[in-house]
Image 1 (cartoon, protein in one colour):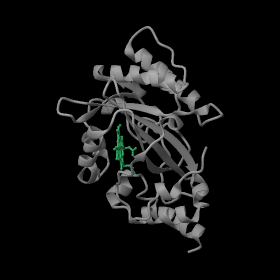
Image 2 (spheres, rainbow, N blue to C red; image 1 turned 90 degrees about the horizontal axis):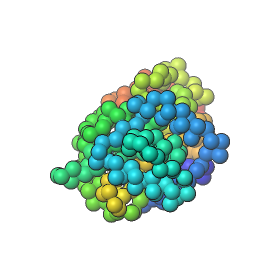
Image 3 (cartoon, protein in one colour; image 1 turned 135 degrees about the vertical axis):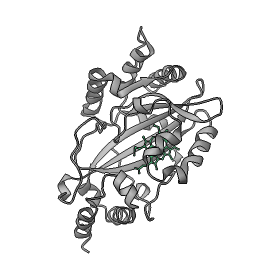
Image 4 (cartoon, rainbow, N blue to C red; image 1 turned 135 degrees about the horizontal axis):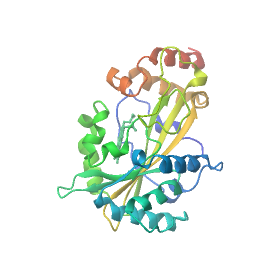
Length: 275
Ligand code: HEM
């Protein structure tokens, strides 16, 4: 795993939702990064045990799904052609790569909606429950995001040029190192009792690519879990993270699951920074 660019991920600002988009590297994003094979083994397990929780596909995303299978082959991940339903083909594609996959498709009005995907490492959301929703309804669970970014996101998706990849990151905080944070799974809560050793940064590396043939947008999400202590070894990262956590609006802190742990997290960071 390459070094993590913490200063890009944690800008030196008071907390707010940001676009944070830059041009991306498609091949590097999908290239295998987990030599242990754990990530793909977990994907195989979730997709085969509970496909209805982690996969869904509307008819308008079938072409994008097949185009993505072809893309995977081009990038060196063998995805067999499966006889059967489009969902069977999706279950072959889902575990072939380490990142999760979503397709956004433009309607007649040009607005993109979530048309399908294979997502087994979500950060507290269920992809099948979001199926069919336009972007602003997908983002409705993030307080204040639509007021700031809904229009920019719709415009960005509508103007994407086919074939060029864009990347951004989201980050969260959790009390376990579990990849699968589907809302139906039990979860340790971050509260006032939290200690340094228990906390993880949940980094989502995201890629957006407009697929040339189907016209859908492929959204890849690669999850990386980093122990908080490892991130805090970078003093600049620790200072910026501390600023972001302390300046978060209460509604944002609640959504991020850090509301009751905020004083404890800030005390941990103060101790590390020698304040
Ligand atoms: C230009 C593209 C996009 C931008 C700028 C964007 C921005 C954001 C931001 C700022 C957040 C809040 C993250 C946080 O907790 O810090 C968020 C959350 C979220 N976004 Fe997006 N997003 C984009 C595309 C998408 C797409 C295509 C999907 C399709 C599924 C999506 C689904 C979500 C979901 C489910 C959440 C809440 C769960 C989470 O925090 O990960 N986003 N997005």
